[in-house]
Length: 335
Image (cartoon, rainbow, N blue to C red; front, side, top):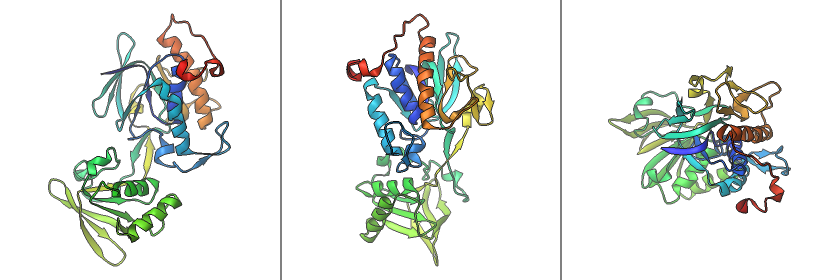
């Protein structure tokens, strides 16, 4: 059982910044995210995309923004449960919440902050027979632990940053053989990564098959072979794992079952403090809805500040909160 003052569902930029604001008020946070790493869309979908509306940064890459946020919250030592999706939220008689994830992990807190971006990201699955039969039996949609593939033969399908980055990483002293399959000859990923892929292919460090796709899955109790349709031939490839990385699609997911007031796929909140219709649950960032809402990271940061001060009053109704400017704290570590 993991206990904290605040559980933050979603470890994107707004969720991470909430840790900082709550930390200034001496509240302990624990973050839960379905993705295997922090950063939400910024890390998973466009880590190399420049962002232009973060104050003080004329331009910053999305991945660098996440790195900076992690450095900023490090003094407050938040906890993380990654690669697990929140399935159930139960409010107890003492007004605390019990949060249960898809892996059965239980968390207890006084406040819940939903910072889930556009919802729970789920993998885009290829339309291929027997797919569900081999899920977790040779097919993975997310790389949670690279060492799982130590000395294994794998195929990665996809042409975006995630597919390219994992191909490069897993081919370096982890897998015995890595094959990258992409249905086109051009890639959507960052140019630097594309150049690395081509060099590794020419050096024989990876097998690169373009203008091709996996069309059939073979195996008994687990996946052990795939059939690939290339331009002018059918290729049979014996493997241990197939990792189709075709991106993620946002869905509201279990949030729809938590008794919250919804406006289409967004959670209705009070714009004064971004509280929901359930006392003790807040929603910030792209997941919420209120008059005048703007879906900007900047707006989410503002919402995190006001939410944190409201959450403090809820967690410590008799506590005295003293507002201090961070410029006079003498350094966050000494605060």
